[in-house]
Length: 107
Image (cartoon, rainbow, N blue to C red):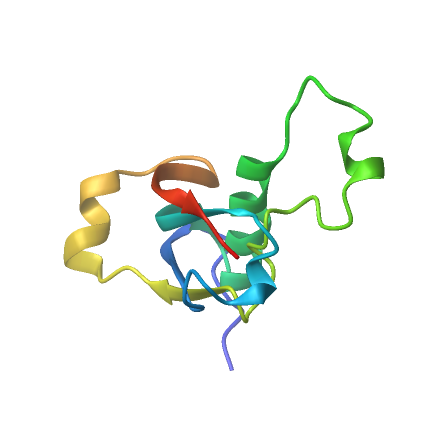
């Protein structure tokens, strides 16, 4: 089996839970997050950076879940963006390339 490519692939994170699902615990919900990453697991880690305030170094100590729910498979599913659509996002370093807040918070 060939080794997986280290080149970023484009991934789409979509809500997997309904907005009234208590698993959200009041977190902001994103209707879509597009991420460049080598794997779907790495895409979740990159997306989780959206939930972190880079100026609040102590925030992660106060939050039970500082990743905004992006690493929770019950809240977000990760699917590869089809190659014909992935070209729209160009090439580049791993990271979030587009995020669309739903404008609501979960239950």
